[in-house]
Length: 404
Image (cartoon, rainbow, N blue to C red; front, side):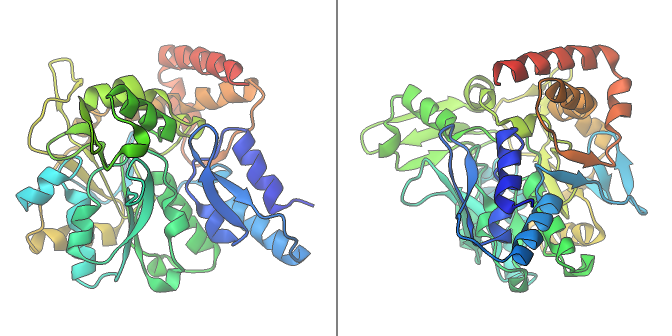
């Protein structure tokens, strides 16, 4: 008989766990802890339960876990972009309040939307993430109920956190700000539990290039001359755009640019599941937000400090309505944008979609199980770019063999 423990183990052992925490929502026997490699991973209490409950939990896990299966939504009357997927509208956006715009990682849009949700009574609570008050170098889920709490949680956290493990029962109607995989799992969990689309909580997400390990953060802190256990404040970005990685303790402090912190340190220690993700831009959310970088003459993003600017994509009709309502309330500023323009300054998202089919093939050839991704037209996307696909296949195969 398949068990929840065996199904979870298969996902984790094959490098397909994203650490989203959905399995901890399915069963109170599951908890999320740091692995030896520095990622959030599920552990399961061996206490026995009834066969019927075991079957139910296992079946639900295999439908909900993004490391087991992902199914793309039906298009309906929405638009579909090759890189950014299903959407109702797309906007250049920034927070109207200069303090919120400056504090956020790009332009404070998610912070402003969170403030609007809790102050307008759309939801009493928004589940997000912020630095741990007791151990600031780590990241934890947080319940946001006020404008002030939303601002205190502003700024991206390039580190493991299982936002869904802090998510309450859906009857609480809490909204969620989470990684694309967390939005996918939250949406699928509600639907598989028999709830309708109309009953789904508001889901906000952001463009995600992958989750670095906690050890990557700790190593960078040490490189800056700060003792990790002594850290009293840690920001990955924000206080400017894109802002600096800044670590502080009572006896030392250090900072490094976003380009260096991500490009030379954090981005080099990503979990495998992120490298084979079919959706790094939050298709399963109501609204997803990403950086609208300035670009050089070749189209590559520039990371010079400037006023933050985001792209905000409404994935659903209610996401579209949420953006317009926040703009009408004076919290954000919106201007329509062509997603082809956004694609030119998001090369990682473009190339990852184009090469995912061959990445998955390489993982299979290396003896790894892969998640089931349905409806994403992955083979067709890779076939359109044969040279890039061939190079990516060989690189993924080599890395997969080395990690066996």
